[in-house]
Length: 282
Image (cartoon, rainbow, N blue to C red):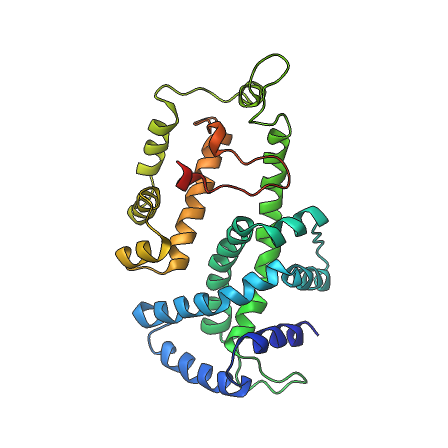
């Protein structure tokens, strides 16, 4: 059964006994309910759930298990979900691709988990069905599996659109006509060569973001590691990566909207190569 497979994956990664986790989870949920599942105590719980689940989820994305379970879950509801061998290989080999899916998936899952598991009391520590009760972590990862399907479809569609552009040329090579590949890309896609250049427009877009995102990007550009940025801004390492990933998507969307053109050294290469961190490179 699907829940059994998730529980086994959680048990393999957490040292505490499942029964103990269920008991501790029940006490914690009862305490958090007094605050309406909001405020500093809930935020602390949410961040800990994110941090503890991250290596489990990342490992399940890398080995393809999360995708397989998501396909089963969608099939049970009559919804088609297909993961191509190329996409599976990318998620296995590319840390950046995994982070992009992982961060958005967890953001969505945490909202759903709070509403369904906690506010609506969907998680029941006393459940006595054939599989017994699950711990909070198992319930949360089950939620992530459903959210994975939505996030993966969006990621795969964006990847296809970018590969259609990237397939036009190898950005680093000159064509027989003597024009570099990037020039062919700009001509074919209709990007505008904005006055002031990439850096100016990049700064304008960055100034439009929330203060915490601006701080993360500027500290990243200055060369500070994630742990140091998190410490300076009093946020988690996961929050640093989340904001950087979101801003990278903002930059790519600006390119699709022809607001900015991405210079050659910031572009993703052709199929099979690793995606660069556009914000950091800038």
